[in-house]
Image (tube, rainbow, N blue to C red; front, side, top):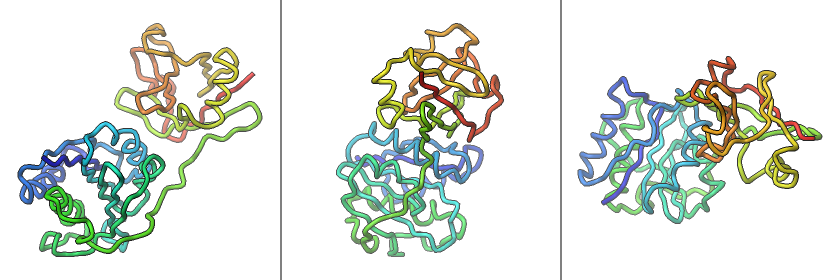
Length: 266
């Protein structure tokens, strides 16, 4: 049984998600369709890229990821199929697969062109329904990728903002605020200067600062801090997060995406 995972910015209040599932089911009723997330902020390719990059590896080998965050819909932007050793990704060619390509070697890239695999009528605003959903359905039935179009050498990638190291200060930023009000940053566990320094010097030699509030350690669990205390923790995506124990850090600090965060080393 094929598994198709949906990642979109469609939200839950309209018919878009249901119609995409309907198209897929009309082509392959046996396909198992899983919702990864439909609440990506509208047109936020960067966060969709981070979310997909942290989530795809938890799905079975052979899973097909249908990714529709597509501000360029209706333009000449390409729609691509990326095949890696264990997964297949269908996406607009807009950088959404950047993090995937950091972790996975590309086996094959195909530009979707063959209209025989599209719906008969193509809306200029809903390629997720009219092109990408049917393509996902046919791939799930075992159609060879070469039949959908011509091979490409590479696809577009995003220029992601990386933390900046200045002497003994690392400057990162908030890239996402989740449902709980946790502030997700672009500081990644296991990589970069910050991780090297914290490994070499230990936790007693730095503090984290955001909105003039200071945090002096990275928790192993939320429960290490008292209710109402601000804390730092490595989230499940292996990104550094700022949280409020039993509360909402976004409301407590009054921050938005793009807010700077400083890690000062002694």
